[in-house]
Each structure stands twice: as structure tokens, then as C-alpha cells.
Length: 158
Image (cartoon, rainbow, N blue to C red; front, side, top):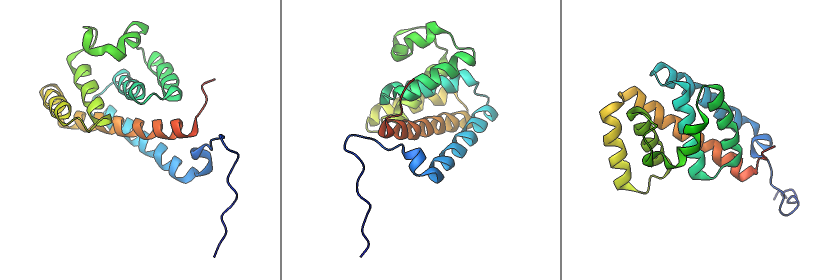
């Protein structure tokens, strides 16, 4: 019978990416493959970052919101559009392709709403090619995973 190590101090979170680096490095490799897939599907970097940000807003991941806001700005996104992203349905500043991608990303993040998922999927079919739909879903799946790593680790925003 093996004994397990004593638990760490109460309230202190471990950084799971540092504690278990192999799965985290695999996740980083997945993210790189997803970025390549998105680019090959013709999705520009600003759209990918909008998806990353919207999913991170839904999940409440401060670390990823900070990281991807800076990435979106570097990619050429505007502060105006970033400022209204949480209410994207109530604006006219996003293109039909962006709107479809955002709805599909939300449906991927909150899959329990079957009606919203079907609606988002149908709308995406009208403006996104199959490879673009697949890439958007993979972007959403990947940022959801990173959100969980950062939220559970309580990665700080500095």
C-alpha cells in the first residue's frame, strides 16, 4: 500500500500546466494544429481571437480574456468591436461569417441548449464551408480546455 503525499496548503491552487507539463504541452500542440487548420480554412486571425474571447467571456476566464484581448488587438481588431463582443447579437458591427462563428462557438461552449445548438449549426451552414465550421468548433473546444486549465489553476492576470 503506497502512501500519497501530504496535500498542499489549503486555498493555494496548483498550476496544473506546471504540475503536469506533458498534457499541457500536448494541449499547446493541439492549439497550434487548430491555428493552422483555421488559417488553411481561410479564417483570419481576428475571427479566431473573437471566438477565443467570446468563449472566455462565457467561461469567466480572466487570464484568457487578458491574453486574447492583447492577441486580438495585435491581429488588428478594434477596441470598439471588442467592447461590444459580449453583446454581439445586439450590434451590427460583426459580419455574417463572424456572427455564425460566434454562435457556433457559444453552442460548442454550452452544448446543453440543444435548440440553440441546432440554430447555430444551421446558421453556420449558410455562410461557412465545412472546413471553416470544423475549424471554428476546434477553436472553441481548444479555448474551452485552456479556460479550464487557467480557471482551475487561478492563473493570475498581471
